[in-house]
Image (cartoon, rainbow, N blue to C red; front, side, top):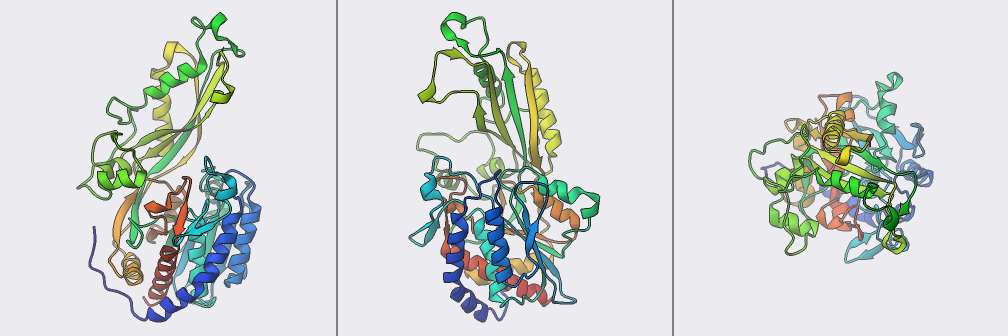
Length: 451
């Protein structure tokens, strides 16, 4: 919904300042995107680059934070404003693999029609540059106290940062008066939004082993069960005939009225081909934000078409990603999935279900003065009132940050509007969107200092 919002004052100087910063912000974003900081890998080069950018923007104590993984976090503080609020700024530097996108193109960013194309240009290295840009806008002296946390494992969901924060000695870390998560976006270029709900996520590996080794499909095919065929039968049980998730125990939440997007917008943004129906029931916004979804994100044990041979497969594994309605605990979801698979094991075969990790969904508090200030900052930066909307994606750390200070608002925004095509070939960020969001963040920090 759209709301009437009073704009902040004194933003003209900041607007001019941010506009003047854009050439350098674009140049630094290009250099950051060139670093192939793919999720799950050793990504210290990107982490070190972030440290350098933060120090150059006035975060003199910026440093790598060892959280017990190959991908260190980056942490720093600016505490020169006694009596002013403390705001924690979050983003992540790890990115999805190039996938079907040529790596030579994916990690060699180019500008096309005002958009910078490259893997991670939007998700989420643009979020890092929003934070850097806001610091530069205040000439390294922001009007509030800041704590900066840049993660290197958000895309892989390994949970190292969450485990680090759960340790008794870290219980007091990252307490703030407001949290700004720069890892979502608006409804379209030039149309700002604050994200108010996120789905959770649970990931499992489903493995079937039936033979000691591959065997000739002519000599042994028939009585001997092929592991991949058994796995395919299991996967087919996860949805009903209408396309709804059919796992008992996975929650769905009601929707007061259909929100954003409608079906036509969803089809356009997702690139659903003409003649292909949408699956499931309920409005598009409910299916995307308030109901679970299940997809296969990886597969082992099956040769590619170019390597196909006439042999039964002895074992096969599928990685399953389950998006959860807000309020569903990941461990509950994994238990429900295990029970479902046990009930639907084909031919009574043994099936192994291994939990890989997950995180809770999120519902934002929208009744705080800080939330209203964020809306006002977006309106001033964009020239129109922002939308509040849900997101189908997951950011597992958000609930943990909220738990550090339950009264503090968590603001989710950023440059990742639908045309950014995050996780897909051709990912890009609109540079005008980066400028407006950097300005909005600077306006918000200035307004927060005046409360």
